[in-house]
Amino acid sequence: MKKNIILLIGMPGSGKTTIGKEVAKKINYNFCDMDDYIERISKSTVKELFNKSEEFFRDYESRACIELSNVKEKIIISSGGGVIKRKENINCFKNKGIIIFIDRPIENIVKDVNTDTRPLLKDGKTKLYNLYTERYNLYNDYCQYKITNDKDIENTISKVIDIIESDK
Image 1: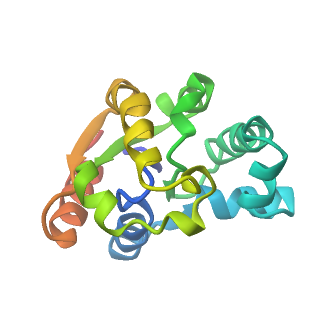
Image 2: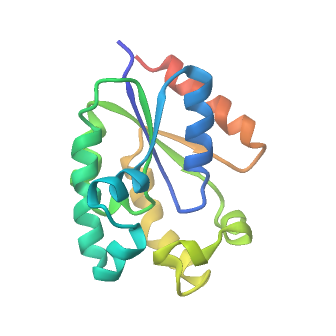
């Protein structure tokens, strides 16, 4: 039986949300951006949660992982880049879904990510390199599949669909 939950992980700016929305449309799955979900359940913006503390935000993120890992409908979830910072977040999805690492080269992310709208990147693009160093191995360790997003976005979307359709 194919798994209904697809979790996309990767760096901020890797394309998780864009790819997730398109894949969901093409294969008739629901789509959920985890940050939007966190804002709904917390009744605060991600920025407001981070202003209290990163730990405060991460607590909501863990709650979101528990809730989203228990949905019954077919869903593609675009996680926040730091979801891998707590192993229990990934454990929620390990046996219930497919975890796909969208690996976009850091140089490509740095070229076009808007650091103004991302709380963890408020200190500028150098912070991206630090996050990349801190998180890259975790993304690799926790994913079941890895797709490099360095070509045409349609190419990456097709690869995600291929994984979903072939996974049993």
